[in-house]
Image 1 (cartoon, helix red, strand yellow):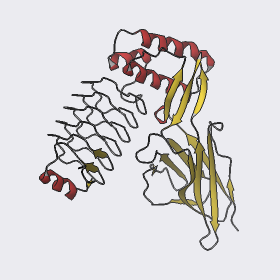
Image 2 (cartoon, rainbow, N blue to C red):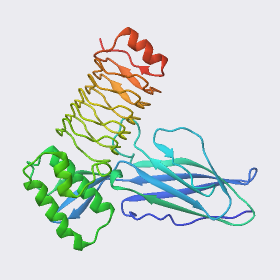
Image 3 (tube, rainbow, N blue to C red):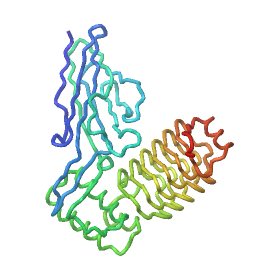
Length: 338
């Protein structure tokens, strides 16, 4: 019988995330079916003179075989996506929260990955768990700054802390971290570009996964930026330029994007519940699986937008003609409220 060894998973966060890689042998096909179990919980971690509470918005699991061939399952799921494969022995998956949720489920007992086709030689399997700053959310902080911090400054500092924690910076960097916190707090500006410069953040790639709840970002220019998994709930983004940006899995519920420019943006699985998209340019966007229920779409331009499984319902600005057009293009509608 061919042999398979499930090696210890490479997990830099064993005290926080527990992973279990299982293989079930099928002698009729000479294959092993692999599944991944993931368990985690929000965790407090000491930092400077205070502490932060951490949660996971996403994560990446990488698989490597020493022999044999791997065939991933083709089942489509909202909570896991197969990334571009390197070859038949190296694969990676991105894990996402269930639709409508902000964080990964605390318990994922069995996520099917695929089958290993065994050859004559033994096969070693190595699994690696990785997270980036975009995958990490600071859900609470104590004794790091005063409570009168503005939403714009809070959003920038939250990304600074996520970057510091994921990079597992040395204690020698703590002084620099404290300096940035002090400078952001004392800065006489709410301008996102100026705050990012103080913090040493790249607006095009370092905001992903952040929390800008209630931030005021009218007219901000973030075209082409990676803003995936970002929380803009209740934010003001009127006349913002978000064209060609990656806004997949972002949360815009209750946000005001009136007059914003989103042409060709990636809006897959994005939540616009009760947001205003009035006068918004959505030409050529990908709105697959996005939530636009109770969203104001008055005079929004949805030409050439991809609408596979996009959810509408109870929309200000909706007409019978527009509804028919959207349904023909793959959109789904929930019944309007009475």
